[in-house]
Amino acid sequence: MAVSAAPDQLWDALHLRGDRLAKDTLILRYAPLVKHVAGRLSISLPPVLDMDDLLSSGMLGLIRAVEHFDPKRGVPFEGYASTCIKGAILDQLRTLDLFSRSVRQRAREIERAISSLQVSLGRIPTDAEVAESLGMELGSYRRALSELGPATISLDAALMNDGEGEVVTLLSTLEDTRSPDPVTMAERHGLLAALEDAITKLTDRERLLLSLYYKEELTMREISEVMGVSESRVCQLHTRAVLRLRAQLRLWHRQDD
Image 1: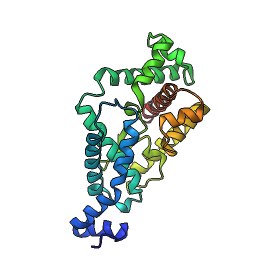
Image 2 (image 1 turned 45 degrees about the vertical axis):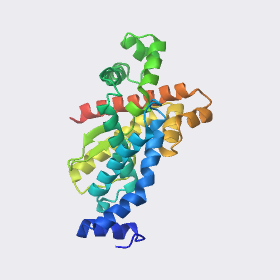
Image 3 (image 1 turned 60 degrees about the vertical axis):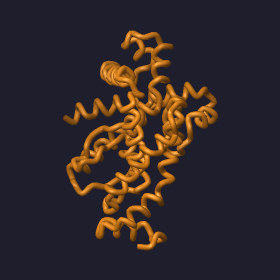
Image 4 (image 1 turned 135 degrees about the vertical axis):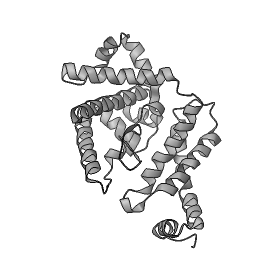
């Protein structure tokens, strides 16, 4: 198999014949994805972390992505691999206890508070209402949103298993992916409809921020310049928007059960 072969030929060689050269070629071809994902993720992480460690973990994620990717499902490899790479990096960071149990617990508490208030109020609660529900001052609540950050609160967070061993994330529901399982398709379509409804309930600034960060792939600093607010405020808005979406999806899952 020639190194210059088209991607389709490489995938066929890997899956049909287990061609090791095809596998190595695919890994090398998509290696820049690792640097891209690690670079974006490093922006929201402590500067003491070694980029080489992030790249090493990300490369393991890329290798697993190449090994498990099925081109017949019609999902772009770049999107699938990016999720695997980021997951591998975050898994490694969790083993270092970078994201403490208390931080993750705080995120779950805020998400549950938003979900509960949305039921009782019939609308998305304000920051002040969430803060009061949690027994916090408004300033303390907003600082908590900043401390959670995009590395711990993300559209890449898992929502459910698709029945075939792959995790479905908020971000993956935004893509036109396909599955041969009708039950999984119905579940995914229901999730997509619920997510679209949840997005319409966000503020204009929150929708703009999510588009800039996940679609245009701008950094938090770049988004702060576009929106004319501080980088810490962008981080707060990002965390609040994703927690609001997750709270809305929590309600959808309850209604669907």
